[in-house]
Image 1: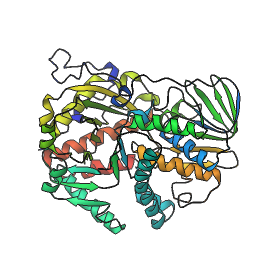
Image 2 (image 1 turned 90 degrees about the vertical axis):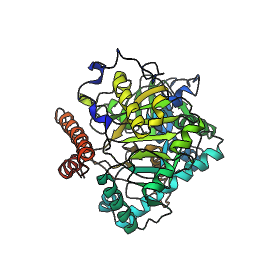
Image 3 (image 1 turned 90 degrees about the horizontal axis):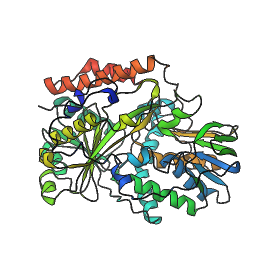
Image 4 (image 1 turned 30 degrees about the horizontal axis):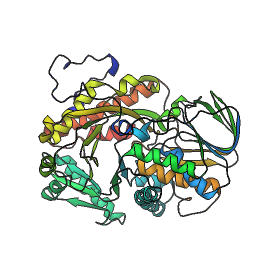
Length: 487
């Protein structure tokens, strides 16, 4: 029977929770692991770019030096080579989710196609899905063209079903995919034996192989993308805190940037802007990485073509085999903090990292003796309707993009490319996709936001527990969770 180790974490402030294993031996090395993200640690010393030198005039000011902002700048520089484009970043490019994520460039959007179809049409929603598929290869193309060595490898994604309800949901998903015109070249159902050839985890009932997905090193990609944008004439100022974005101007701690076009590309950190606390919900995701593993481990567990991997529990988990033969693995188990707080102590919550490591070992017991060398965390941004979007108001010159719900590596490429085309006034097959102009209502004020998110989390945990214990679908729990997500 499948257990769900992430469920055991108490629903309290992580930085106040005692560590029950603190006095026990720690053969896994979690307690001694480096608390810098693997990807960022492997970059070595990062020389920060100079901050904004003072008041500045520009044509386009982009706030946020992650994937969203940098892809927007990169494509804008291609479309408008004479434009004065400035990117403003509080820390260094890739400091946030873009440098700390799981390294999945997966060609899907967090929002269901049916939601986008309601905003437009089934045909338009299908075009959006296919554009998301294509974004994976576009990242590979740009990385090769710009000489960005980021370990890009298109090995697909394997998602396992490890209970009967998970297997039932996978069959329904494949039926839906076929009804929408997606064939085996995109997504296919695997029997247990075939699924185990991709990832020989425990308790495999079935699997789904999704082809449009690549594994990569996100920090090397985002830092390489910043250099590529600069080579096209984009100016990047790091160490610059933005206080507000207003029509025609961006106020920072180093001066004011006056620009006809402004772009907000802050994802979860949107909550730091004046008046934007309720626009996107910051939700934590934590990761661990093992030491480099010998070939004998992969002879036992598979992952030979470096697919990204997960299973179909509700409390999301995700992993990849890195290009230096580690396993980088994460999950969303840390509770939401009151007031949309972002807290460094929560990102480094050691008991949660231990539970993530335990979940990995439960999937692949051969990893029990693998030492954990890195543990880290970060925040992702969730809009109230769970739909990523691209928006631009030509009258005010204000643009925004994001809300990827943790699936932003490839989606940010498509969003940045699309927003650049919309800003430049160029009509393409992307500029009329149904996420362009989509909007969501704001999250509820506190304490209702905290109560709703915590309740949703408890329901998802209960659903995993019930399905693991009884091997039956937790219908009421999953229905309520969908209701809280705005489904």
